Length: 298
Image (cartoon, rainbow, N blue to C red; front, top):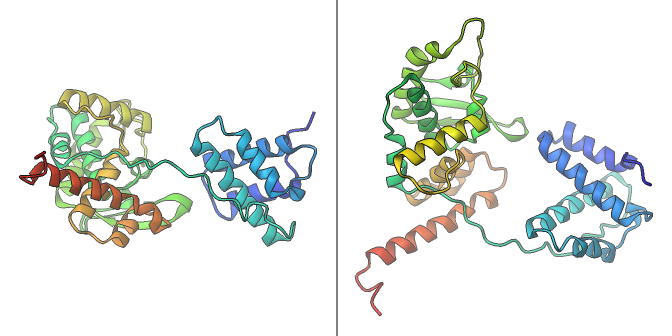
C-alpha cells in the first residue's frame, strides 16, 4: 500500500503554493488532496512519465463527479505540470493539448434594488441591530468579502476620508471608498453600541463583535442575515456574499467601469469580474420584457 507522503517534487509544488504564492489553507489542502488522488490512481506509474491519455483516463474516471470537480482536477494538474516544466523536473506537459471540461453557466445570485432597500432599512430596536446594520451597510457599500469584513480592525477604517483598507486573498491590500450612510452607522456602532457589547475581561481588536462579546464569525453573520431576511419577507436564498454580488451588479448597471469594479472586488483577473456583465445583460433583458409595450404581445 502506498504511503501517504507525496513525492518530493509534488511536495515542493505544495510548498510553493503556501510560501511563495501564499494561497489560503483550504486551497492548499484541496490541491494536495487532488494531487494525492491522481498519484494513487496512476500508481505504480511515475507522475512525471504520464501521457495525455493517462490524464484523460483519470478525468474520465472522475466523470461521475460534478463537472466542477473534473475542471478543478484538470486545473490542479495543469498548474502542477507547468511548475514541473519551470523547475526542470520534466520536459513535457501532458495537459497541454487537453481542453478544459466545459463548466455550466452559473450566474451569481444578487438582490434587486428594492430588496437591498428593504434589507438595509431594517428596524433598529436593539444594540445588536445597530451592529448588524453597520455590517450590512459596509458590505453593500464596498463589495468586500465577508472574511475581509470580519477581520477588520480599527486601523483599517478611515472615517474622516470614508475609506477602508482591506487585506484580501494572497495578503493583497486594497483601498475601497464607502458612502456617508455607511459612515453614519459605523460611527454610531463604534461610539455607542460596540462598547456595550464588550464583556468584562475581553478586549478584541476586531470591529464587529457578537452577542458574547467575541469577534463575529461567518456562521454567526449568516444566521443573523437568514433570520433578518425571513422577518423582512425576502425569500431568496440569501448569504452575506450576496451583498458582494449585488454591489458589483448594481455598479455595472449604473455604468461603472468594469476595471474599477475589478479593483474594488480585488479580483486578480478581469475575466472573473466579467461574469457580472452577463448578470447585467439578464437584468436589462428582464427590464425590457417588463417595460416594452409589445414585449409580451403574441
